[in-house]
Length: 79
Image (cartoon, rainbow, N blue to C red; front, top):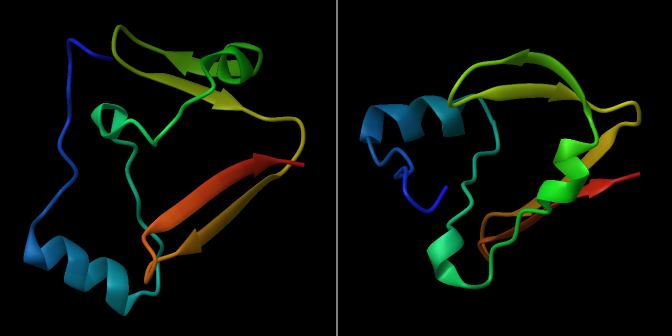
């Protein structure tokens, strides 16, 4: 949301915990110009729970998450 920007966590404890558990982490930065969210795809998914600022959706088909932390690129693909 352009009027509600969120910064990714930069805390060292957070990243230590994430990397020690071998968990991938990324954020979408809409102001970067290269990151994209296809809202029309998300809007078509079944809603599990929704509040004013949060919507939990579920996909009928699995998603494929591809990440390369060294190149700092990632993609989430619908199968």
